[in-house]
Length: 367
Picture (cartoon, rainbow, N blue to C red):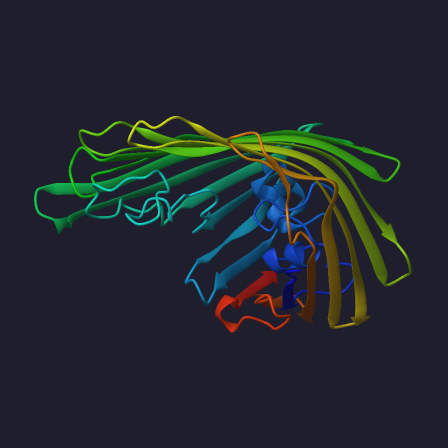
């Protein structure tokens, strides 16, 4: 059974342990990209832009040394408003699929890669007018006229995120308005990505109930060839809770019902294939202030009861290796926080596979 282990170093004592980078979300079994539905964390601003009202006055940098991914930004309070600028976010950028070798749609005619979705910029603004509100605009643009004679490789992207919070009720909507790459090996080559995330949550007696719907994918149209496409959808309904078990320790748990579907249509015009998953992941995590300068945390997740995959022929199987164990920690240097992460996976023999190590480093400063 595979086990994923993350060892992180970073952040603070009880008063600030709710504010961290991707390492904290991963080590508590949450979504490192969008944050958590019920745990307060800086990553939540990408799911619900109104969360900027609770995440003010800090600078953060975050990078993965193994892949070269780097991102970061700053958020600041300005009177009755808050704003932020974030650089390098690659949420659902589909850059792997923009490469010639990894589009997964049976494409064989492309001779080069599409221009990547990179150098992205996200601008946030938020405020409180009785109802907390927030908005995010995502922008990216690039061009290359040097790679292939007579071909201009270009990319442009524009997206928006809206969020609100009123007491125990929160709601959000995020959508890509445009995300296109043109000209891989020929001027007529086109790649278009799509992404939408909408949801809401309600807090009641310490529990947070949530429902979320995600739809994303991409279309690939090589010059003079039939369009191929990949469509992913997922519905997630669940509940989570955080409980203090001592003056310095906290426990969190959640359970979600997830129903997802992936449809693929090859560029060769083959019949559409469809794969479905129905799962019920359960997560139990903890976080404790080991000392005034060190926070330790960990979690275990497993898909139980509902853990089914259905292929295009309607045949079912149980998903294997769904138990994940994560761990993390935080170092606090006053207002300066330094996070580090090391993630690995079993090689199937019970030993750590060194080829799968992934190191993450982050620095953030609160002012």
